[in-house]
Image (tube, rainbow, N blue to C red):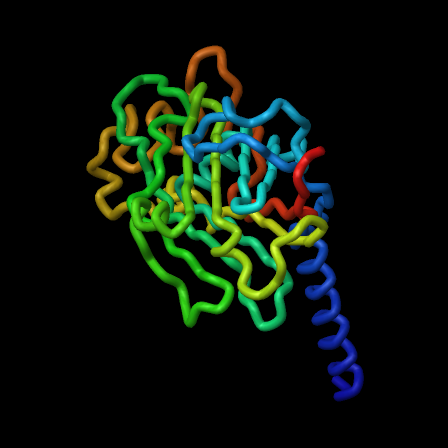
Length: 275
């Protein structure tokens, strides 16, 4: 075969593979832009929506069934996320959660909070609810805008430094995540005033533990019983990982594939005191 023809074929194949790879990659969701909201009364990070006003969310995505509310006062930035998609909720609780705030301050890294995931699904109940046993981990990792690196601290230590978090599953089908963060932890020299724009992102660290386990079965699989829940699996699920509850839809099938990373981005303009 002529060398020039061979090189042309190789180039054409490489271009085809590149086009297929780009077409198959998930497209990032656009950043949603919204004004901030001022709150006068304190908001507690306890995993409850009761102390939030009944206003429309500033971020809403019907595909992932996610809503996010953000408010601020002169001292704190508050965030409330409500996730009703079981697959996304599992990513955030089992894979781990990342909350980041970027102020665009020159030379500053984004302020970020990272929570390690956990797998609470150890129960032998026949048909448990999809969102069972949600809780915060004992520790979190924080990166400050001008810190030399991430800092790991307990939840109690975080509250002392001005970072309060809450997580709950009020009806066992909805994940509620709250964060109340001191503006002093997020900003350094940039004025913390109304009309200042900041970027906030809520993301999952990666795939759920259950899906990882299904891809990498334990060596003693042959010795396990063929029926019933397995250790480390979602109870009430078979080998495919689908929910087997009577009269219920397949929760994992109707959600986004867990290998597509979840991320919600929003640009907020800090609010001033309400008049």
